Image (cartoon, rainbow, N blue to C red; front, top):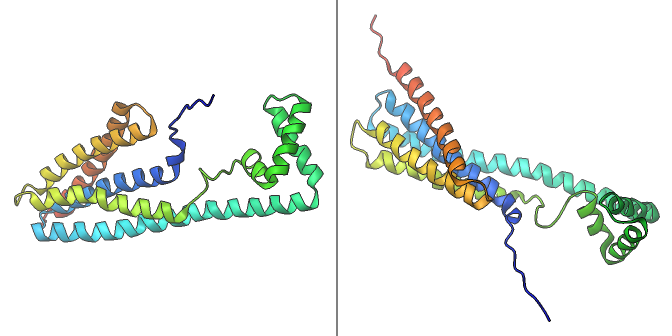
Length: 233
């Protein structure tokens, strides 16, 4: 009798979810802060929007490049470790078998069973066994630079669209207030979605994201007002 017990784990989302959440939040906060700061200087509506478009393009490219370089470094390290492990398996297979058996003993198997498990897994795919159990490298969690870069850049643009839309639709003179209100709403929503996708408490995730976004906009507004003051001599 075959029984089915489907389980939905969230760890498989780790690679793209982290990049997407980071990109979306950065898009919302960075562009909103830019818009609020520029608006606080007294710049024209067109000037605020032009700054927002430039910030969105530059930010998306920066996020993609940063994610790619970061995750590519991880991928390079994984490849180097696998190459080293492959060489050791060729040169000293018995030592590698002992090493694998020791790992299983440390996890609670008795010595005889640990040895049998190590032998069977090595016959099936020795490199995969060492990658998973010695190095912690699995197909699910392996570094994927292009995926991370694409997810981060796309999410940044999606996040930036919210404050941009608020600034575009706001009446003259109300860009700052409209952007702040829309951004805080968006941050509460994105924080809730990220917490739900990751299995964390939703309220806590929403509040912590909104808090840091509000802090960033407050700082940007203060800087904008500082440099927007005209001083007569």
